[in-house]
Image 1 (cartoon, helix red, strand yellow):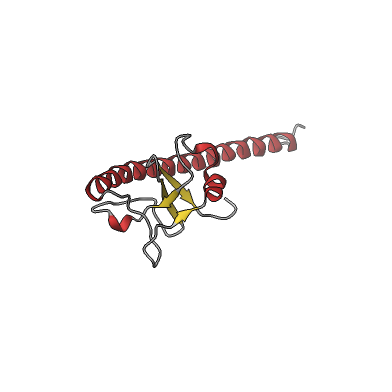
Image 2 (image 1 turned 90 degrees about the vertical axis):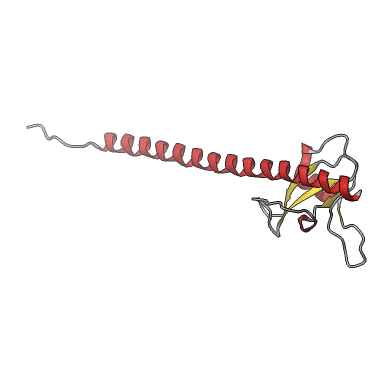
Length: 136
């Protein structure tokens, strides 16, 4: 008499295949989320670039965060290199400032927060997204 039913081997194979499929779905979901986030950041940089250029043409200076004495607050080159690594333009100098969006009119940024800043290079006016997040 033959017994019909699922064998241990077929059960293990089925579970393995299901785990592989779930892994692929999770991986592609994370990739999609990161791609969407990158697209939002790129859109913000384009908006910022236009607004900063208009501000610079109108006022002769870039809109940056200032301390209580009115001096421009810089971001250290070491910190910039640690976060951005090889993404920096070779024409940039070593002076970076945090953009103060409060000076800019009618701008809406998707990815701006208190812990994530957009910085600008003094010489080239290249804008970078610099995120201050531990263990990322």
